[in-house]
Image 1 (cartoon, rainbow, N blue to C red):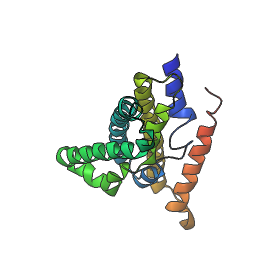
Image 2 (spheres, one colour):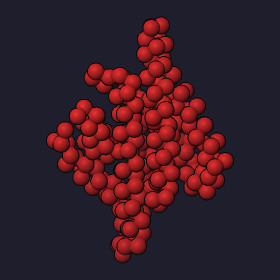
Image 3 (cartoon, rainbow, N blue to C red):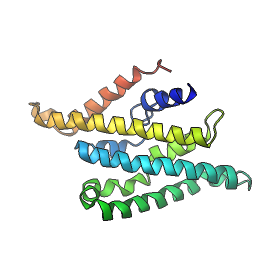
Length: 191
């Protein structure tokens, strides 16, 4: 039951993008096509899960015992940057088209506050342990993916819609993002 609460909480109630407003840059920048959104979601899933695992272990077994908790943010950013570099190298080799489609937003995962935020939030979980922290990271990245893919689907649909000239592009995208955020607020009493 506890893992179900973590999952529902991370995906719907406290969605990292639509409720906590972290990771807005890739949310708005990469979500023009569903295929690109899927690639970004997979990259964020990988980086967020591995980063949370490594940073949790780093924090619990190196920083805390040595009294270096104040270096947490810097250490976490270094871990995330190394993982993003690894993802970038692998994507460039395995899927050059996805690498091109993600463009500048792939290296921006390094500074994606959602990844750093989840790594820090995983440390503060009540009765937290490594398994719960990793499950929270996977659930949060599923929430990120849900927000990204739903938004990309709506954007693809809106490309074909007959909209007034003043609403095309950025205005309708921001309006839809706001409405999606409001829709997710409806889940607030779920958990």
